[in-house]
Amino acid sequence: METSYLQEDVPGGVPLKMWTRGVPVEDEARKQLANAARLPIVHSHVAAMPDVHFGIGATVGSVIPTLRAIIPAAVGVDIGCGMMAAKTTLRADDLPDNLFPLRSAIERAVPHGRATGARDPGAWGMVPGTVDHAWKQLAPDFAALCVDYPKLAKTNHRNHLGTLGTGNHFIEVCLDEAGAVWFMLHSGSRGVGNAIGRMFIELAKQDALRNDVHLPDRDLAYFAEGAKYFDDYVRAVDWAQRFAALNREVMMRRVIEAAEATLHRRFESHVEAVNCHHNYVQKEHHFGEDVYVTRKGAVSAKAGQLGIIPGSMGARSFIVRGKGNPDSFHSCSHGAGRAMSRTEAKRRFTLADHRLATEGVECRKDKDVIDETPAAYKDIDAVMAAQHDLVEVVHTLKQVVCVKG
Image 1 (cartoon, rainbow, N blue to C red):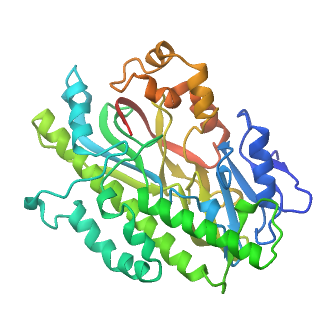
Image 2 (image 1 turned 180 degrees about the horizontal axis):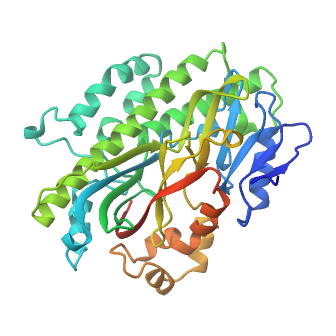
Image 3 (image 1 turned 90 degrees about the horizontal axis):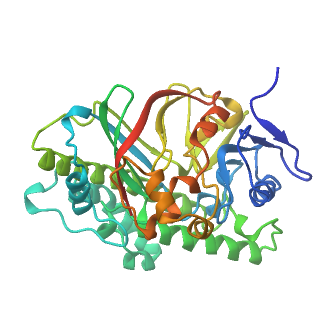
């Protein structure tokens, strides 16, 4: 029986299993995957999702299982970046013909771009879903981290909680196949997660130099269990992942409140809801071993588990249910994946191209979002076809409003 993935043997390393049938993979990404596969700590094989592309530190769209060690650069600097989606009781007919006021209300409610957050209005107090409530859950462990790593206290931490960020982070209003309205957003651990990631990546590199560890790529420096910084990194990355999940919850609350005020109606907002990471590490059991699974641009897709695979500013997105495929380490793609660099997208596409590609979507249509235009990404339909044995589609979403960072 033909396998659904393509296997490539790596001299001096474990194999690559790639769910990339019908999807292009650039040579730089293949080389990066092979470098990870040559590490002595990698268990069984490296899995590549159909949205795989070259990344900083490690390949985006890769799943790397490691024995008694973690690679900080494989987790990356946007620790806990991921998606949240919430189905509402609103219907397509409940939305106005002119969606600009709704987009504007969301942009006012959720700080985005390089903006930092504002303190919650006093009336909100410790209500679940507010910054005060979320920070109360995070503050004690953060204070403990700052005792050992005082530089973290000077980062954007609490004031980035409830903020979207830049680049490919977004908030969308979507319609599903039955006309139900969904809110969906994409963000992570913001400035504090970035600081944690960069600090430990550098410490891992220093460890490798000090211990004369020979690596196929310096960015793949790792901490082994028992190493000086291993436990601290596990503690810090766990905190950043919790920050990211709570960040998405705070933003979702703000989006819902903005929609209620703009549409002048109350509605139920979590008829179905998913909040999932796609840049993170956690301990799991695969192929007879307890391993640290790093998903960099990949989503957990255990049997029955719900996940989110977004397209682009003009393409469909999907709520999916995992099939628990063991060869992918129970994983699937985290999106369409970039087809080209941001610089190349800005060089290749015009404002007219972008406006045509986002026709029917209430979103920014200016030169500063050309790098996020739909054609800069892979074909989401080809990506979904390549991973038919990893997930099944539960809902198909099409955005009608898109807010970019």
